[in-house]
Length: 285
Image (cartoon, rainbow, N blue to C red):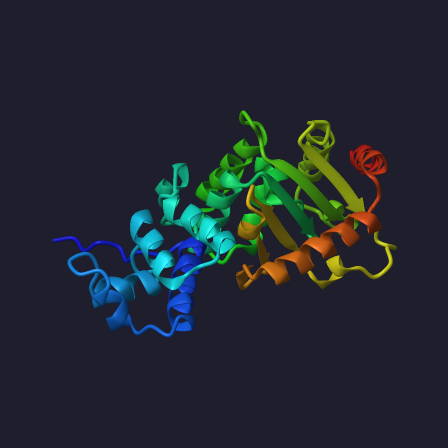
């Protein structure tokens, strides 16, 4: 008999679980006391699973718990929004053997975001990559040695959010160094040509950070800020070759937001960036 795969909670579900546990503790209630308020509906194992993101509570249960804890209206709205979201793993669920949970979370939240702000030091952002460029990067830098084609398929499929009805807005700042790597014969010219074309879409803004820029927050490393209709749901993904991580604390997210504005100010404006990209493309034979 096949065993079910262990449930991997999304970053949203982990936040909901942590807040439910924190609110209960701040109210000074034990798990036993909370369960006693909901006979026949809640028991200790269920509450434990909810507070540790091992299973998701129904919205009506979350609402009842928030009422008991006296949660403020702003946080209540955010947590009920999370509770009402299903496990949104859409088309990418078929690639569960290829992509890790953090990447799955990124794809899911890109599909829900209204705006993505991305800064990259060494590479063209994934949402803007051509298939050949993506293959060149993934095949050399990915931790996996097989499944490169599937990972490229996923990366390209992610880009649908930019051209769907009601598309995501993308503001991308790319360091000049990312436009100069040797990704293979003809690959970089094709990639630069794509950047030049896609930058003309009304929902896409691409800026280039010149190599001689003054020190700015972007030099600390690449990151992606995802923004949602409710600002309290905004989240940042930081990462590198070995490990990526989510930044969820609103104050920390705001720090990244402010940093991104500084990065945009340090980069070439949109028109000059397009000219720069076209010049780089035309220099390649």
